Length: 114
Length: 114
Image (cartoon, rainbow over all chains, first blue to last red; front, side):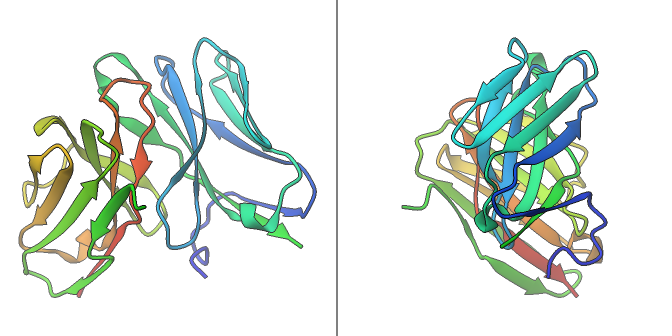
């Protein structure tokens, strides 16, 4: 499949388990962060976002945690399902004059086994 | 209803040729982007336009020329294609070009230069 030879970080879980995907960002001036899900052959799909004045935000089955002290972002997926299998990207925006320029992380491959 | 659409989905061409990729969004957004995703899945911004005006122009060879005939369309023309141009090109759009605007991606155009 598409993941062969990619050498991205991988996370393999059983259906029903909770998943945690981590991301280290680089710019301490970044004030907006997004998680995207990219399924094979498709474009990145928005999952959840968080602004720098928050440290936690919850959506449906997903939670994003932000630790600005160590520049770390995580995505938690509850009760992971096979349909959650995809590559997950974090992205940061430095705000100010960055004018919407998103800097993407390298991606993590999540595989959910039935 | 397709929010951000791109044509063609696949593009196979010879080195040295000139080709164009088209993007349209029906979200009523003011800002549109082009991203390049390489074989390692790394996503990098190339250009952005806000209401037909160039906002972001990353370090991209001048063989790549974006054109925005109106705010719903952003096309990418590539001259003298090279092997290294082979990648997946994604168009995206957002309401505005502020730092905390969610970007919505198209399905991608898979370009293969032989």
